[in-house]
Length: 174
Image (cartoon, rainbow, N blue to C red; front, side, top):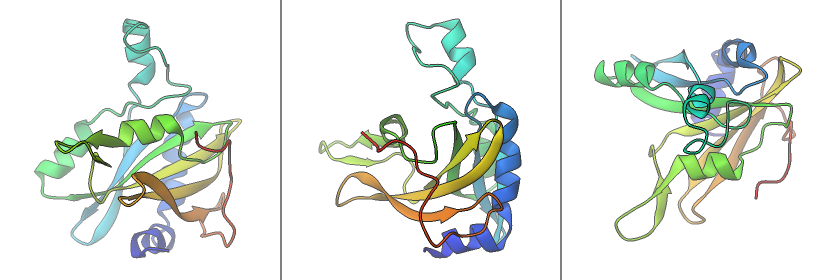
């Protein structure tokens, strides 16, 4: 487990993240974790996906139940204040905490040389499993430049403690 993975658990941030995403159910909830003066701080934000889908379903064919598009205002305010982004989090309603193809596609860009690189270098991704409105665990992922994909880092249980065995799992990433 990385130091950040340990810090998320030891600081008790997982229950706070769970409370932030549960009200979005049956849609995906989302937010960020920033470091401010050595402390990790949870910054929940609104998922704009459903609003975008309703405004223009052709441009945004997926809605909030299976896509997240975070409102970036909390990120921008924290970054302008000199704080450091550490984690982007979002929930998966009723399918488990796995890093989906859609998650991958939104977290990477192609650089000038044609290589796939992470959109937000060094920022980890936490996917929270929410079933019937209640978070039941989460999994943390980091970008692996060698494979241009996201690798599993740590799993947390419903109480936010680190789990010895990975889970909860959903469908295998495509």
